[in-house]
Length: 401
Image 1 (spheres, rainbow, N blue to C red):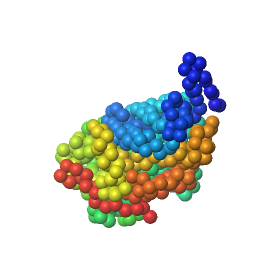
Image 2 (cartoon, rainbow, N blue to C red; image 1 turned 180 degrees about the vertical axis):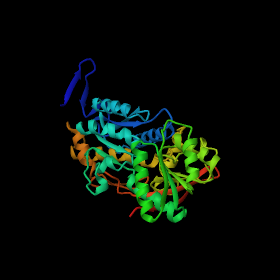
Image 3 (cartoon, rainbow, N blue to C red; image 1 turned 90 degrees about the vertical axis):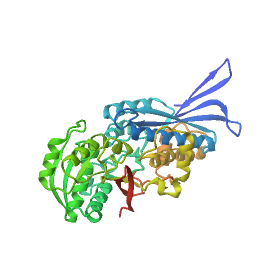
Image 4 (cartoon, rainbow, N blue to C red; image 1 turned 45 degrees about the vertical axis):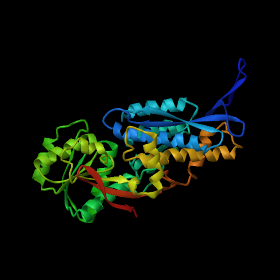
């Protein structure tokens, strides 16, 4: 419903719908309308290094769109909420975004488990969500994707990160073919992301001829892993594959090196500078991450320069480029909707932005950006990194086939 309120003392006109109008004038003399883009990520806690990089990158996209007047007559604002990497908090944040009628799209979250708690309410509200980091395959293809029965569960969910199905397979091929490791001990943290990634890795690794010499689960809140390290040592494993995130992965790796000199490998949840800061014995450890390193992409040069100029104190981390692209995808959808409605936001802006998302296509920071019929990114590029002399060094980048 469109509600018009006239403020008699000033004569100003305030518009409330899915988007809002303020008193400033655009370049053509009309009122400027404000569109809010929500941001959900862990801005405090163990995973805040990644979350703050996500927030800053989305903020940069919003500021760039406003500076360049990418959507004439529209000003973008960012509403950032902290989910603390907790599904229950993410669900509460989803409600807050829904209640703010100015929000036309949401960027985030970081964690697949948090995404699961947000998907249904956002879908019921026809509110577009684009994650730059979620890799849980079931989020876009349903719980039966492993059997080939792919069903998109929520039409409002998109992502610029590729799936665990792809990431796990890529990791297994890299470890088996490139690192020449044939015997692996498999550990996961029992969370949707970690368990899904470990399962995907196992399927491809064993298919290649590799052997899983032992498997275990750990509590991601634990920091003492000596019991499982003892099992690893007895197994004869030549590497550990860990499905989980760096707050637990770092001490697991360090305690592993104290007992047996073998590398730990993980997914994009491990690929953070903080993994190395928390782990004095990270040398030789391996991680995969979505996309190609932005530092190696010509398409990312402007993003890197602008991020530095903006003066953010936190690094853009693993998801900076994919976050900028996720945010820009929403901006492009808004641009298309406004253009189709004679330069104004329509009454049903959320529904129209959602409809426009499937057609979004542009050259982004990470390369060409578009989405398939499941809402998944069409960019399946993956990179394997290894810790060398206190930093992550890219070893291999390739598109999944």
